[in-house]
Each structure stands twice: as C-alpha cells, then as structure tokens.
Image (cartoon, rainbow, N blue to C red):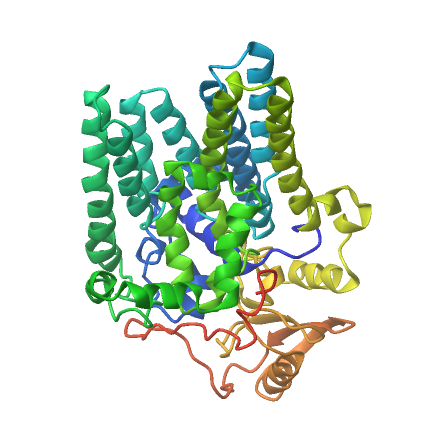
Length: 493
C-alpha cells in the first residue's frame, strides 16, 4: 500500500507524528489529528486513545526516521504471534500422538499467519492493534501454561495498549475463575479474580481520568446513543431492558452479518470454547455503535478479536479430537479433514480479500496519479507547513508540518491535492475542485501540476481564504460525519 500511495495520513501519519514525538522525549502529538478534529494544539494522542505502549517503538526512529518503520514493526509484531499460536496448539493437543500434535500446531500457526483480520489491519497502515495481537496471544498461552505472573504482565501491557482492553482482561479473569471453579489452582483463581476486578477498573480510570488529564474531550468517542447517553445509563439499560440491546445489535443486517462472519470463517469452532467470551466486549463495542464505520470488516477492528477467536477454535478442535480418540478410524479422519477445511476456508477468505494480490506484480506499481502525488510531495520544502491529500500526507510528516486536506482551509504554505477521485474526508471530486478554485482565487498560485495533481503555494499572505479555521487553545473538537451510504455492506466503508 505504501508503494501504491494507498496508505494515508489517517491513520499511519497520525501514529508517525506521535511516535516521532516520543523519540524526541515529548508527549505524543499529531497535527494531522489535532487540526482535522480541531482539538486544541497541545492535546496529546494519549488524550485520544490511551496507548503509552507505543513509546516502545520510539528507538526505531533513532535508527530510521521514516513512517515505514511502523509498518515493519507491525509486521514483526504480528509475525511474533505465530510461534505463540504453535505453542498453544501443542498444549491443546498434548493428548495426541506426536505426529498429530505437530500437524495440528502447524495448521493452527498457518491459519493465524494467513488470517484475514491481520491482512485487513496491515492494509490500513498501522494501529495499536500491532501490540494488542501478540500480547493477547501471549496472555492466553501463558494462561494455558499456568504461568500466571506472565499472564498479569501481559494484562497490564494490554491495558496500556488501548483503553477498552481492560474490559477484555476482566472477561479473561472471569474465564480463569470459571475454569478453575472446582479447585486445581489457587493461583489461577487469585489471578482470575484480580484480572476481573482490576481490568475494568483500569478502563474506568483511563477513560474517566487519564484521557481527560491529557486533554482529551469527554465522551468524544461515545457512539452508543441508541442504548444510552453515557456508560452509567448504558449499564442500567443493559440490566433493565436487555431486549433493547439485542434490537440494536441485530437490527441492522450488516451487524448480524459481522457476528456470523467472525465465527463462520472458522467453521463455528470458536463457539465451543469459553475463550470466545473474551471477544464479546470488542464485538459489542462495534454492533452497539451507531457509527457505521465500526461495522464492516475492512478496517483493523477484527484483529483485536482474532487471537481470542482463533485460540477458541484451536481449543474446540482439540476437545473434539480428544473425544474422537475412542471412535473409529473413519471418524478420526473426518475430524482431521474438518480441521484442514477450517484452515483452508480461512486462507481462501484471506486470498479473496487481497492476499492473492501480493503475488501480482501490478499490485506493487503505483498509478500515474499516485506517482504524481509523490512527485508533488517531494517538491515541498523541508520545514514548510502543508495541507496534503490524505493518501500522500504520510510522505511529508518526517520533514514538514503536515496536515491533511479537509473540509476547512488551514492557511498552510503549500497544498498538495488531486481532483479526480474522492479521498478522505471529502465525499466527491467536485469538492476537491471547488477547494482548488477557492485557494487559487485567494492568495495561492499553482507552481506545479501533472494531470489532475497540483501543488499550490501561498504567495499572498494578506489574503484570507473564506472558511479558514486554525484550531486554538479554546477550540471545540468536531467529529467526522459518516457517509450515509456506509453500513450497507461488510466489505465497504
């Protein structure tokens, strides 16, 4: 996606600016994020989503000052989960003969590695999910190994990866308590009780105190108006009117399709294990949301739930195999074929969603428009203030003060834009053409152009472009308004 100019300022550019600030021993701030959503300039990204674990990536910028180090880091973190999945499968199939155990471990690792949720996350640049996936897998694997000290360390790190993951940690604590309810592990029950209490408590403290302390606006990401105005009202309604939750969760075909898709692509095997319960907070956040961006599978959200669903599928497969030990050879063969089919289905889905394109040479060649955008970005001087088309903005963050081109002019020294296709956050090429005409009529001059791509320079600083807004200390944050066409398909958004 980098080579084809398909990964944008939202969100790779935001994380690039934030981690680069960490590398300078500063709080993580992003002008792309702050200006677009009109946050006050000094608001930290920790006031957006609480992800201090990203500071661990800062040393990468001491070696290579390039946004692509985040893409490579995410790939490495995803890949680090492969041997963890293999270890989990070996433990789950400990009852089987060595040859069967090894084959099961290989298939589980392969299914993880070609998993479509990881593919979707990778296609979207970089997100906190890069840490969430391996940490979740390691927490689950250490739990199976009864290494509860390591479980607690992973749980703490997950709480520092994203504010809502404390809820996931809490559910995993409940699962540990359930599995050890009849004895067999005092440390397991103690760990489970601690996670059950402290995980949600950490989420409450983070959302209620830490994020506002970093300048984040309260309730900014609250998109659950159909079930409550805030968390207290939501919790009360969950107890008094659970039917309303079901109506919201399944009232839109895409939401029901999302739930079906998540389990069907693993042949419904996750439904046989309590580990699947850990994914419920993540899934509920999406299907109860009134923001249609949360419903399709084309974003990175499914990767958060992927470790739980895959682990649950492996646990169920191992239990079925154990139950088949006393059956005939033909039945055991059908069980084995079923496992292979689950892996094959997951691989086919991944290929259909874009994995197969990786072996197509044309997939790596940028379009003429992409090449022109890159060339225009290269002509922007170092240190300049620039508004850039979302798809090319991330190529400027290392050396300029970069914002994305959006609904309001920001008074930048340079503007990089194209007028042929819709790009976030615009909804039509006509809007981009109008912006170019507005700028050219009010102090800007086109200094370079190729096809429908142009580089504009501000030559008259006395001219004020109508509608210009530059966020200040008293700015009121704004939200993106979802396109009404969204929410109609799992595969668009």
